[in-house]
Length: 424
Figure 1 (cartoon, one colour):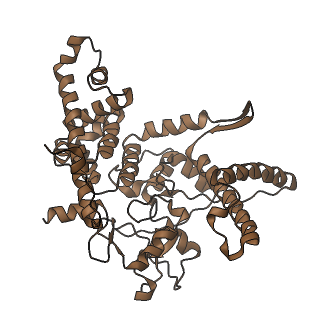
Figure 2 (cartoon, helix red, strand yellow; figure 1 turned 90 degrees about the vertical axis):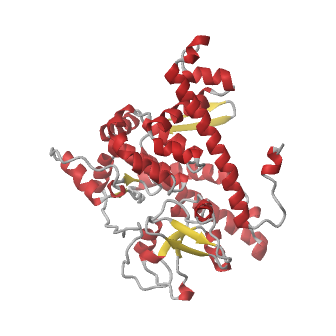
Figure 3 (cartoon, rainbow, N blue to C red; figure 1 turned 135 degrees about the vertical axis):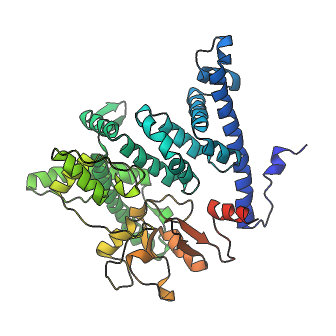
């Protein structure tokens, strides 16, 4: 009998492509097993056999039969209902191609009664994107779709968050606690200010360390941890705000909101009392969000536009920013901002560093005549920007998805594994 250990035995010297293939095989088994339990739960609910032992719900039966937590049992029940509604999703799960995380994400959306009348027509879109997008991008896509399909519900949630905003400072023993809860846009403003002040604290530590260690200075010699610097930055924010207020100065803060032009016109018309036709939730250009994909209430975006500035950002069919006419090697100014707004995180597979903390990298390197234009730029963290110099290549397909190719010609990550399996 083959043991579990032998299934995932990692050989010394295994190539990266072979390791990816093994990971895909093991993950496929997990997907099929999860889908099997979920479909069993759905069938139990349909037959009612769980009632014979006094279980009030299928969730409580799963908790008893499989020793699951309430959260996990509830998630499996929702997945089972989703697989029953969408046969195409069940087929992909049986093939081991519909990720466990993606099943949970879609199941949560399907369970929203306010979008029930839009689910049947959206099966191909919602299921199809689950196997073409990275998991994090799929979560953003579903949030966009749900917000458009349930426009009033999304607005009510944003309104509730704004209405229930609060902030407090309290002391327990030797420690002080700061708690603040509010809406998405205000949270983005707070995040931007905190990040800027934390970066200033980092440079202060670096300069102090460099004065002591000189060229031997490295990150491990910084005087404070990241957590300590962020707390000190928070204190500095309050002190700076008090000083600026007394001096009559107001520090400028820039927060980017990404909103499709048609969506902007649609919600502007509604704000003016008109009744425009509903937006298509399947159209990604109808989005209204922060650069990291967090949905924003369109009404908040209209207020921000009225009080701040509006900038035009033009994308092509792949989602790449078009050429802004700058002819320079280093991405700077508006062109750099445009490149960093074209993706949520570093485009290297598996890297989650937010785009606004990345470098604007040339997809086709400058040394190979790659132009410094928007369509040839992508956000890449410092590590993966340099990694490209080791012979790795990147390209973007017609659907706007990034592919990264090793020097030996094999592709990194699940897309390459899926492509290899399809041609096997």
